[in-house]
Image (tube, rainbow, N blue to C red; front, side):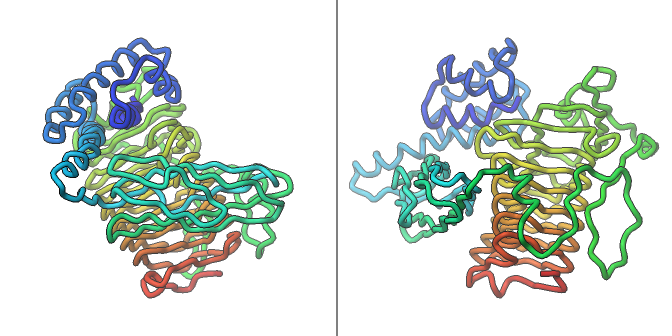
Length: 470
C-alpha cells in the first residue's frame, strides 16, 4: 500500500493524524473507500506516533511494521523518517546547556527546479524540500522563497515568481547555507504567449532536425544497427516461450487466474533469483525490490502498466535483478521519482518511464544499474538524475521531452551514456555540477532548448565526450 512513506512524513512533521489527514493520504492512491486500507493506515499511524522522537527504537518500529506485512526497505524508510522528529528537537536541549546546535548535512531532493512554460502574466509557485542544518536560504531577485530558514526536519520551501511578459525567462540560483556547507539549486522558467501542452510545444522546437518521436512503440526488436551508427529506440516483445527454462516463474494476473494478483505479492513470495511474469493490465501499485528477482511484462510494449500517485513506481536496493517490458508511470502526488535505484545493480530493459512529480529515473548511493532500450520522457524535472556517487550504464535509450535536463549529474556521479538520444528537453542534454562527470559516447544530443552541455568548473574535466552528435 503506497501510503506508508507520506504517512511517516506527516507524523514526523505534525504528530498524530486525524481522520481527515488519513483520508487525504489515501485519496491519491484511491484507497479511501477501502475499509481494510483505512483500518491498516490507522494501525500504522499508531505505531509511528508511538515511536516518534525515539531515535534509539527504530528497530522496534521496523519489526512492528514488518509484522503487518510491510517490506523491510519500506519499514526502514518510515522508521528513519519519524526518527528525524527527535533530531529536530535536539537543538533546543543543547542550546539550554550553552552549546551550539549540531549542523546536519544539507539534503534536497533536486538540484534543479524546472518551472516549465507558463502563459504570459501568470505567476508561478513551486515547492523545494530541504533538510539539514539548521541553515539559511538566499534567493536571487525575482524569486521569493518562504521560509528563508530550514532545519534538520524536512522543510518545504515555497518558491513564488511573479508573472512576466511572453518570451521572458527566469534563471536564478538558490543558495542553501549551513555552517561551512553550501548547496545550490538552479531555477528555470519561461513565459509564452499561449500555453500549450508539452507534447505540442516539444514537437515544434526551431532546432536542427532530429528523427521523429514515435507516437507508438514498435512491436518487435529490429536487427541491431552497425556499431558506428546511432539508432533509435527499440523494444523487445516478451513471450511465454521465454520461460521454458529451469524454475517456473510466478504469474501475476489482475483477474486472479495466476499465482498472485499484485506484483509486490509475487516479489514477497519469490525466492532470491526468482522469476515473475506479469500479464497485461493496469497495476496501481509501487514496488520495493530488496532481493534479486526478474520481473517481465508479457505481451507487447504498453500492455503491462504500473501507475501510482504519491509514491515511487519502482524503488530498488537489490544487489541485482531485472525489470523489463513495463510501462512505469509516476502520476504525481508529492516528490517522487519514477524509478529510484538507491543501491545495487538492477537491470532495466525495454521500459517506458515517466514522472509527473520529479525526475523519471534516479541513480544514487553508489548504485550501478544497466538501463537499455528504455524510453524516458515527459519528466516533471530531468529525465535521468545521477548523484551521490551513482554510476550506471545507459544504452540505446531515448531521453526526450523532459522539463529539466535530459541527464543531470552531480556529487561525484559518473554514469556512462552510450548510443542514446537526448532530445527535445526543456534545458540542456547534459547538466553536471559538484564533480559530476561520466562517459558520453556516440549519442545524439541535438534539439534541446538549452543546448547540449551545462557544466560547472568542477565537472568540466570529469566529462569524457566521444563521437557525440551535437
